[in-house]
Length: 183
Image (spheres, rainbow, N blue to C red):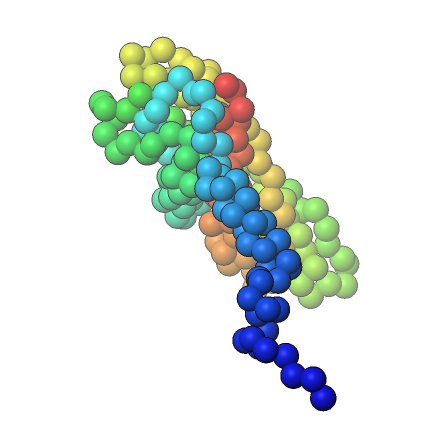
């Protein structure tokens, strides 16, 4: 039996080729990923700070105003396109959102149904405006209809109330995607 001299697993003092390849790959990936940012950083928008005015809600939906304001703020922060500014006077731009009306329709029901398969569509008519600090309109009174399906499970009121945060998140994303896409 022939014994090998040197440390076990070092292949005679030379690092294995696979280990070197993985190390080079990691260094290349780390360099490439170091400049990666979530969102649309680097977009040229005509403002750096954005103030979100209190949302005006003209429909009787509890918590919709607070949920939509939360969703808008969260989306702006996560996008990285503009910084959120709490003071209207110091902001470069002001976003105003109005929920004007709601349209409800029954989409599906069955005659012998116990209520579980009932589906109602709810559509909000939303308008928003973006102005700069001087009052110049950057985006004029833009309409954005939103549609959501609500299943009866436990009653429409309860199902609808539980769906409001998700609907607010989607609406905030739609509004701000439109704003960022303008430039």
